[in-house]
Amino acid sequence: MEVTLAKSAGFCFGVKRAVDTVYKEIRKNRPVYTYGPIIHNDEVVKDLEKKGVKVIKSLEEIDDIPKGTIIIRSHGVSKKEYDTILAKGFEIVDATCPFVKKIHNSVLKESKEGKEIVIIGNANHPEVQGIKGWSDSNCTVIETEEEALKYSISNNKKVCIVAQTTFNYKKFKDLVEIISKKGYDILALNTICNATEERQTEARELAKVSDAMIVIGGKQSSNTQKLVEICKSECDDTYYIQTLVDLDLEKLKSFRSVGITAGASTPNNIIKEVQIACQK
Ligand code: F3S
Image 1 (cartoon, rainbow, N blue to C red):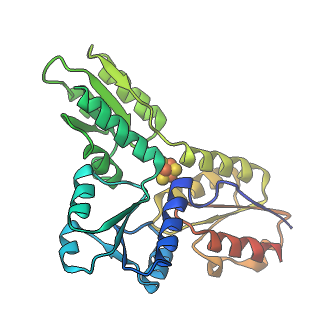
Image 2: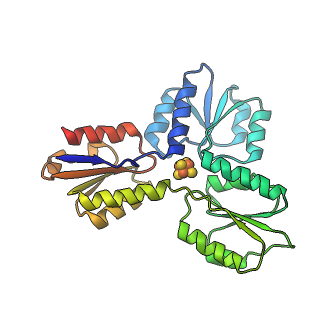
């Protein structure tokens, strides 16, 4: 049986970097905390917990814990949170994805120059909340057409528009177009990261040429569900598993070619385990 693993399966660059950072910090002999779970994967979070890494859910908690290192995850945080952590005597190891950091820097610079900021994205997402916290001027989050239509600036200011990194590109373009029609002086920065799109495109291509597809990822993971949907549309024999335990290896033997892909929060060791089992 021919087994092909998608190159883009699993962690994107920013998440891999953040997870690696935590494992590196454990080796130094002082308390290590992550501000929020480093990744939406229970196995990884539990493994880190076993190794002594604690998850902090809010900054109120840090008054009651021993001083140590707080790791900022790939989503990033606001400037205020950053300053509070330092002021309370903790060391920060910043694992904010460089693509997100670039948005923080643009928002800070453009707002300082007097532009209003618009973030195209989901207002409840931690990445968007973090970005918002770098603006020095009025900042509005827009996710829908209605919100874009309603948007107006109070005076003659210019507007700088950025996007949440995982936002859909077509939707971003449509919303920018709606705002552009209002006649404001607009600087639109396309800050969308293409890691998700690349993973989906590769999954589709692989599913087209495979007799069976295995998609590995958490049952709650929406990006994994999307991959399953894409693969199913190209390959009837698509299997959605969380770990190797869920895989029927006997059934797989009847296929000549099997493709493997995985959601953005699936650790490499789980992917490898499945790949090796299929190759046996
Ligand atoms: Fe990942 Fe960074 Fe893109 S966290 S999805 S590489 S913005």
